[in-house]
Length: 305
Length: 305
Image (cartoon, rainbow over the protein chains, first blue to last red):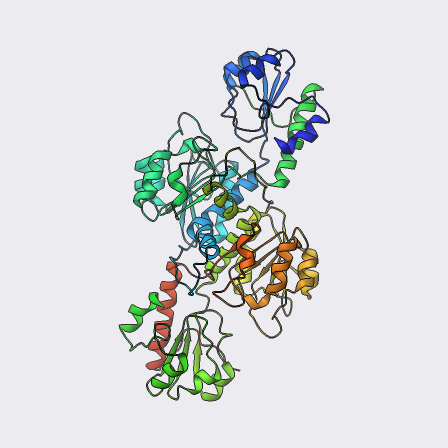
């Protein structure tokens, strides 16, 4: 990616898949012998097949918090080290989650469009938003990002509860062992868990119907956490009040039915994308590469077991 | 306003200026004898001339926090009582201030437009936003709303300082006696003071230049706090990073030069406009009217001295 090109190329010989005219498998084959490290910035899956084409591969450096696009079993089998970006983006992701929530409730992008299109000709002549104060907010996945979101929402007067595999110690929020009971108890669901076989489509039509017509969903986790087809239907049918989405099933594709909806705020997987954090992530990636090739301790190694 | 019509008309005989075909002065003249109360919802100035046309007027009920559009001296002289909406909108206004700030920094409406117009064809191929964490935020006017904004921004890692007529006791934030030093010390200015002769155009070109090209201004106070013409120039010239505006000099008119700018978020004076707060404000207005006409204590009387 552009923001990494210069710093990386000062120290390493960098080959770019995304600007190569060759299909990815040809690209890998032609550089098979020389590639010792892969820096994964986009969502290109690092599959067993991908890895099998790189016999000299020693490390996969993910410039992301998530690493569900990397075949960790195959990395382990091959003895390939994996690192991620640690919590580099945590604050930014939490900030965007809150920003999307206020944007959906208070219709910020919709009202911005309303003014820019010249429709504001009479004071207070538009559909009003909904108050954040006292909203009950259920967080799906109270890891580091979920916790940052909860902390930010407290002074807004929100009542926080959460679902995760098990209750967290020392957390002042109500625990719901089931997603359905989390949806039933709350006005807002924020999806901040990682995507696994267990959490795939964890928000299905039943969860959305349970959240109900005043319900809002914010997804800053992964597109696969929500049944996107059913979500589109729910939004069109008024089953939900609105959604704020930073992630999608098949990025950069976004269901076109969403483009005309006023109760939706769309964001291009930008939750972690601030200039400041990208500098930080570039430094972490570089540090991990340097450390690896000089036998120093890694900053954010991913446990392969 | 529509949201008040039914509750008010159940108890009182209501005449509407905004749906009357007559010019306002004819309207007032034709109802002169009968009008005992004015409920002020929009921004129609309640001037000495307005008041002089209503010899039976006893009370002006403002369904707003601000009352700078009411000639208080004339009300005092005539013995007309004035009430406002107390802090009915405080939380909503603070919420929108934070929402606008995140929207400007993280480019939420701009990126929403980007997706809806079909431009998202490659991951992370757009200008990135700026991080909220550790931003230095200066609040102009640390009254009830300014304090709610400060409280909300604390867990985002913002460093808060403020300007007001005098330092507030028991406030953990740095005090700046001058607006220029507040601008020099901060990345963000949030305007939440009331509009008076002293605060008119308190944010002039010099303040904007001092805030600088990474600076962001959020105005949820009144349009007149900022020199709008100079602000437009500063945005076009890149003197500022961006602005989020809920208020304008001459609402509902918005300078058309802003419509094409990507570093601007526009909101139609909607900071207090949530369904929940409007219900609340309607109740307060009704309660004040009922209390006044049955000699009971008023809820939010405005001091006329």
